[in-house]
Image (tube, rainbow, N blue to C red; front, side, top):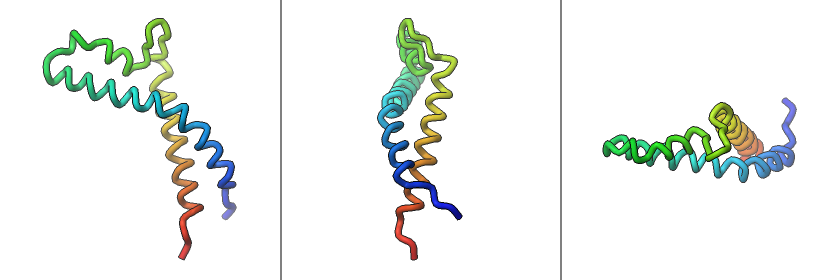
Length: 92
């Protein structure tokens, strides 16, 4: 089995991680806070959280691509992280 170049994987992971941390954290925080608003019955006052959660940032509307970019970025980070981990852990 050919080993994937670990340095290349680390570089890819290193470049993608900073780009993905903000949208992922934003999605988690806005989703959680909006769910709290639903539970407390205050959804009308916090619809702006739902817009942020879906990727609508004022005049910039990324609702059509934001979920796919989030999902694809997280998938790439997961794959590169697992591959790096598999190739750098001690073998018995």
